[in-house]
Image 1 (cartoon, rainbow, N blue to C red):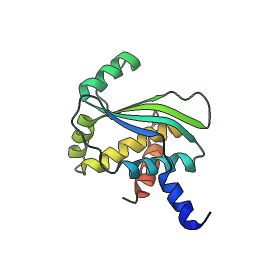
Image 2 (image 1 turned 90 degrees about the vertical axis):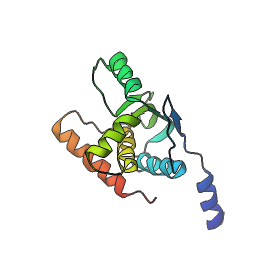
Image 3 (image 1 turned 180 degrees about the horizontal axis):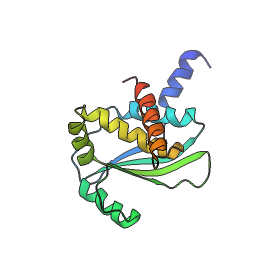
Image 4 (image 1 turned 45 degrees about the horizontal axis):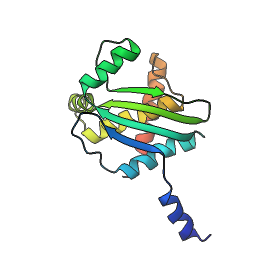
Length: 154
């Protein structure tokens, strides 16, 4: 296969990352680029993506999930449900509150898309094996987020 054909085939490859909305008005820009970027994080860590669903929702919706499934009674920007059946492959539903991302972007005085990308890669990093439970884990998670944010080419 010639170099041009290999590049064309790679560009057409379907990455099993899907984006959904639940009760929010929202248009996710650069979806193909986001899929490739997130996919690279898994690929570099030798993890195959079986299916990852990002569901963008409201604070209210995510608070209900947080209460019902995790027993937490507070707002959060993201909940990652790891449905993977084994090591080396990722299957998950990642819920992201558009409201929290917007509020945090304002709080930290950064662009909405910058905060959204940070939260999206945060969920992916959980599936890759990163934790944020301890102070040290949270520091390592932030470093990994920064690393991947720096690798965006869009």
